Length: 410
Image (tube, rainbow, N blue to C red; front, top):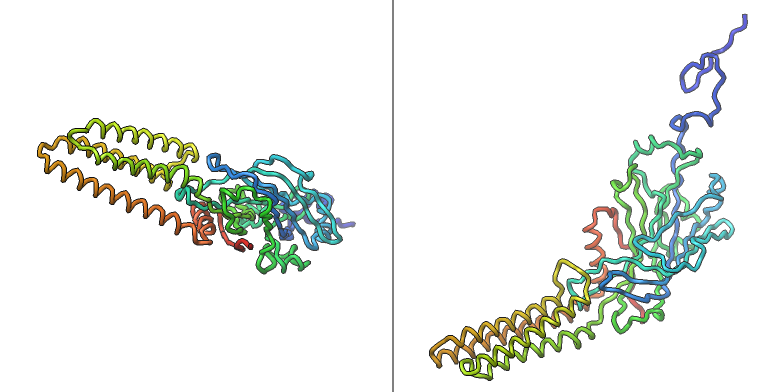
């Protein structure tokens, strides 16, 4: 008698049926060889910063980005991804105004792969204006990869199984170019993302000749930051790599000093000229002068508001205008109140005592305002502190690191 052996598929008898093709098995039954971890090196050149729009909270730059994959092509060929792999890079919070290249153009250089992208882009930026017009601004350009850098949620990865084509998952980590990893051909494919070391001072190049806003902004340096997105932002617990290139500027306050601060200081000082008139005999004239100055100060507040976006806090310039406005109100109230004093000697002494007190307070406030504005712009690391404070305020950014900081070279 001929015995037909009972074959098993996945530990279950087949009942005499032929073994299924492995390609038809459920993906969960296949052995996952683990993700393919790739590190891409990024360099960005900023040719021009054509506008910095404070009321619109945006800026426009012309940039050229090169992404390097050293020794990457043989690995992709072995995985069957050479023809289909694209880095899936995207500039975040950006509006493409003009793209010179055909998207991310791919170049093959032996075993290396490169992607090039040049465009004029308008980036949105949340300006920090508490110190306006003595403020610093960090103009940040964030490049994000749509491939996950990490997949810490193991259960979600098991449920997802292999990709539909049966190939390995791809994980991409972005890293700035530096003199070490650019020369190391093994740094772009590794068992763990983030291979390579060194100081990535070559990752961002700013052509200061293309900066045409020198009369308004002073260039203070540039930096490169990296962080991973929070797993909660992904339904499968993925974390994505983000590389941020930042240019740091301080505002040149000369325009606001000569056109707002100095005229307003002089106008407020004119309010003290009212004390040259006798408060009892010329009450009407003093009130008329002070009310005229009040209306002028209100007009300056409108001018200041037009130069700023709609923010829920007061800037330093707002404080200055409001204090000047409040002082003129105090002088107006003082005139009306002192005029009611019947005793001439008491009235005169009280009038000049209040004039000296209010004048001294205004002088001290003006000196303190100038001192804060001058001292606040001398620390070259102010821009970095702004970025770090912003990163701490955003729970969506994890493992935030400042990779490099470079001051301008004359």
